[in-house]
Amino acid sequence: MARKEGLHYEGTAYWQKINPSTGEVLEEKTVDEFTRETGRKEHFMITYLAEIIKLIDSLGNKKMKVVKYILKEMTKANNTLIITTPELARKSEVSYKTVIETLKILDNAGIIQRRTGAVMLNPRLMNNKTKQGEAAMLIKFHQFEEENQKESDNDDNRK
Image (cartoon, rainbow, N blue to C red; front, side, top):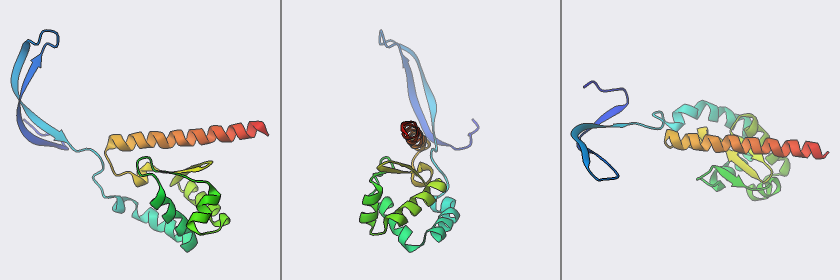
């Protein structure tokens, strides 16, 4: 049997097809078992190193304090930090203006999505799990963006 790309032979197993209503064994056979790799093969650092270096160059020391705070304090399960801009300025010990500039740079670079009182990091940069886990996080990331757009549209309609 030819092996397919990305499949790894695990051995043989005994397989039975059973009628769930009666419990009768309908078919029995020995089968080859394979596993398939999921997730990324490349290392995070190699993939994004050039982008990270460009981002660091554009940020500078004070702005990096904001980035470090976000990375340290975000909820790792959903890449989100629930915090207001004034709180972020106070807790990262930089000015409000610096926080606004930093968030704008990160947003424009596609690193984060912002919403009132929350920041979410792009899972493509922060999630090194399975493809399914990354896909689920990307869906949440896009929903976060859509909710932000709805909030912005509602604010425009009230004016």
